[in-house]
Figure (cartoon, rainbow, N blue to C red):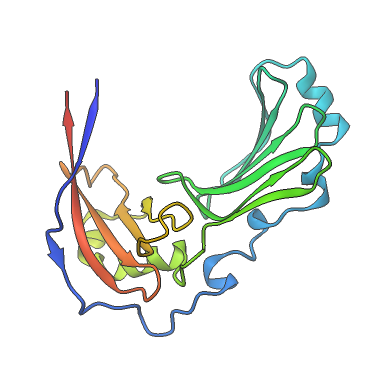
Length: 223
């Protein structure tokens, strides 16, 4: 079964709703001070115990899996290793890739509802030196949490009606790739048993001012 996603023209535009007073991008608001966004020495090089457990293991190795946090490892056929750490409260994945010798290869963060990369991404050589940094905050004053909080106010009626507790973050204009575009977040309400719309509404937020720009609809058709 194929899913065809058709992004329609804007159905609504307003400049009446702007960023709530007091919204200022900072590490506390955006949760960048939380442990999931930190990198420590133990994460730069895999310890020998983990390497030994992965050596002859097929599938994944789960060390921690509780209501708030999951820590698991995958070994690829080429010998590379992925350490995936998930903060279930924030819905953030920390992806740490390693060379076969256990040295860090890359590091990036994703918002799990929509798998949109946020914050920063790092590449490392086999000596553990940073060779490349991608800053996904480039050109943005409004971070992922602020965009969602703004949508909570805009879509308050639907959120209360359908008892929405989760939000999807499928769209963010990447100014590293599209240098002439404007920074914008696209936020959706996450489906649940009360909310299964045929048309999914995307709320677009200005990434600099926090102003609510417009909504668009995504229609899902089955082919």
